Amino acid sequence: MKELLEKIKNRIAPYIGFLFLWILTLTARIKVIGRERIKSGCILASWHGSFSLPVFLLRKLHLTCIVSPSEDGLILERFLLLSGCKVIKGSTRKGGFTALRKAREELEKGAILGITPDGPLGPARFPHRGTLFLSGGVNPIIPVGVAAKPCIHLKSWDRHMIPLPFSRIVVSFGEPFVLKNHDVELLKRAIDEEEKKAANILNEDPLSLWDMLIPILFYNALSFILLPFLCFYLFLRQIRGKGFRGWKERLGFVPKSNKGIWCHAVSVGEVMAAKPIIEEIRKLDPERPIFLSTITNTGMATARKHLSSLATLFYFPLDLLPIPLIALKRLKPAVICLVETELWPNLIFWASLLRIPVVLVNGRISDKSDLSLRALRLLFAPLLRRLHLLMQSERDAQRVKRCGASNVFVFGNTKFDQVLGVKSFTQLQTLKAELGIKEGEQVFLAGSTHPGEEEKVLKAYWEARLSHPDLRLIIAPRHPERIPQVEALLSKQGFTSIRRSSLPSPDLDPHSVILIDTVGELSTLYGLSTIAFVGGSLVPKGGHNILEPLVWGKPTLFGQYMNNFRDIAELALEEGVGIQVKNEKELGEKLKLLLISPHLQEEIRQKAEALINRMQGAGGRYAKFIYDLLSKKP
Image (cartoon, rainbow, N blue to C red; front, side):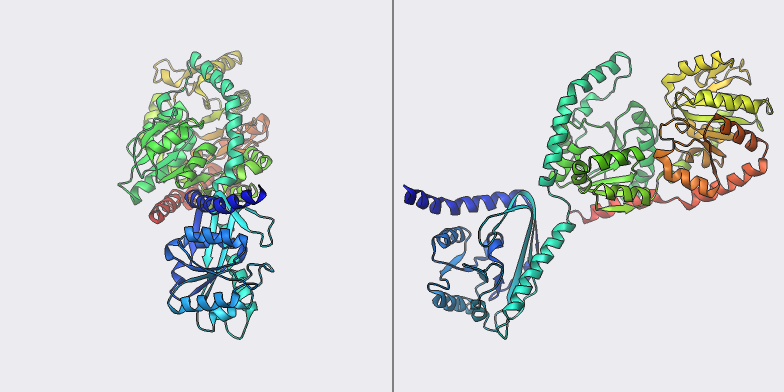
């Protein structure tokens, strides 16, 4: 019975091996280097433990191979015959000299000979002297190196390497050389160096899909566990009148296209950050279709206002299987550009599987994101290594490298480009008239405020009004739906207020606080201010974009919580155009100081203008990278 099983194994094993390698070549990412060096009459030499894969890849060349007449050699013989090779039997123990002589004859006829200098008995990775006879000081030897990741090694004398499906494989054919003076050490060094070269190339390449398997399974398991809670959250938003739109697109039914550029920006800030990049891409490649997706309704409204003529817009598909795959199959993009921090594991995984490059543009890593990524490094590292990461600053680059990324570049911040794009003096004059702001009037504008900040702003404003009774106040809450709460606060503290949507009005009281309940006007409103405060910074919200008032040359105040805009805040402080405050007392003091110092206001205006002009151009650099990436893609 044992003999019967052994015979069955010997019969079936070659077919299993051939089928496995065929499946492997379909799923793995294989890079072959130096194949053009293979010529008639040459000898391909690889170690015994990595011999089968090069032979399978070169099966159309019909190699000639020497095989041991042992039982294991019989299995290998059948595999080689399936691979289109010609087999010569012989080993050091049986028929070795005859096999070597026949192999020499085949070389003289122009055959390509495949050998394992350390086989069939070992020692592993050290050549036998039979190789010297084969080369004869005439026929060139090409060392072959093989590296794969992930792979397994059998517990055999040669530690036979078996790459796994979806792995990365490098097969490197080295420079041909003629073996003279019985120098077997030269042959050993040549093969070892080629294997080292293959391993180095493998380490430089992006990760295989296998490396992402555990993180993607974990992510999807967690997603499906949380799915009921997500559905409940969406239901609550819907019944409160805040539901998301575009459900057809969110379920993957996006526009059909081919070879376009897909940019994704989650909301208003990211849409505006993407705007300079999309504009520059359109200049470089006017004919290529561009698509822009957003998640929020306000993001879509901003995109329609600023980018509808440059890109086709749709809502971002949910990152739940199989929705990203449906979207990718319909859109068929040539490249995907994710803006700032938009890392969606399923989208990145399926894009990688479909060989679609993914680029993070204007990338940033906030303090909070840095802690999360480092805590979950084992899960995020495989995702990050599949991306081209184009970061805003050196700080962001170092943070993402600590999280396991390798393909990282620093290109600057597109916010320096976008602020000039929204600077409209015509719109500014219109807003001044509608809001009843007279020429020469002093205005304190608090933009993007959060709960807990309006109280601080009102205290600082009240202090300043004691010495500047005609000072006007405009408050623009970050979320317009909070307007009723802010109105109640103003009324409680004895202030009158009026909404922007009610203006112009003949009954406007010049001492009324103007509340901005519209979307998309804040960047221009900063232009009519005398001094600006940017919210989300006196409370721990991470801050907002201080470049919007700086582009108008306005002295800009902000709090200590600027985690999301740390680099811009530090730059503004270094250049003397931004002023950081710790609390409402300091806010009031700095506000009063600036109001009585026109010369300081003018100095800040000049410095801010010089800073903005110096830091521009990031959008063009991002666009050029994407354009070059598309040019390299077949």
